[in-house]
Length: 320
Image 1 (cartoon, rainbow, N blue to C red):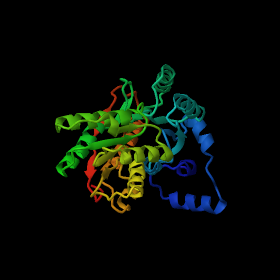
Image 2 (spheres, one colour):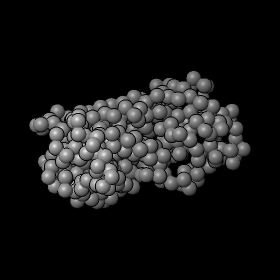
Image 3 (spheres, one colour):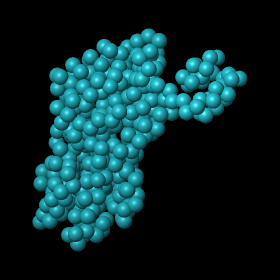
C-alpha cells in the first residue's frame, strides 16, 4: 500500500502503516480535504436543517447526528429554518453552495412550497439523497422518518384518564406546525374515545416563545372553570406551565397534572419529575445515517424509498 493511500485514511492494514502515520505526525502533515473532495466529487458533509436550535430536543438530535456521522468520517453543516418557508429555501440553497453530499431536513414547522419541492427534486437529480424527518402532509419522493404523534398523545390521555382526570386541557405551539397539528388531532380523538369533551376554551395554541406560553398558561390556570390536567406539546412548554401553576398556588399533581413531550434531560431533574413522551431518538438517528449512506455508497441508484414510522414511549413521573 502506498503512503498516499495510508494518509488518505485507507482502512486496509499494511506493515508500513504505523511507520507512515508516525512520520506524518512528526512532520506536522495535515491532509488537504478540499483537494481530496475535488478528486472524488464528494464533500463528506451532510446538511442538517432543524426548526430551532434553542430547543433542547433539537440540540440533542444534532449531537446524536454529529456523533453518528463522525463515526463514518462525515461532518455536519447545520441550518435553522425558524419555521419559515423563506428560511427553509435559503438554508437548502446554502447547503448547495457547500456541495453537501446529502440533506436531513425537518420541514414540519413550515409550509412545503412549490419552490422547496423543486429544490428537493434538484438535489435528488444531483445524486444528493434527502431524508425528511418530522410530520409531513405531502407525498414526497424522499426517505421519510417520523413519529406517530397521534398514538403518542393517546397514551398520555389514557394515562391521565386512569388517574381520574375528566377535564383535560391542551397547551401547544403554532397551529400550522404539522407535529403540533397531529398531536392535537390525537388529543381530540383520544378524548372522544374516552367519552370526554375537548373543550375549546381549554385548547391553547400560539407562539412557542416562553413569554407567550407563560401568558397562555396563566390564562388556562386562572379560568373559573379550569382543567385538572394539561397536556403540553413539548417539555419546554410543560416546564413553563409548571412554573405558572406554582405561581398560582397550585400543587402538582394534587391540583393540576402536567405532561410534556420529548423527554429532554431536564424532564427528570424537575421537582416534581415530568411525565412525558420519549422519542426513540437514537434509533431514528441510526436509521437516518443508514439511509443516507445506503444511497451515497451504493454503486448504482437505489430507487426504493423508505417511509418509517416510530412509536413513542410514555415515561411516567411525579407530575401526574
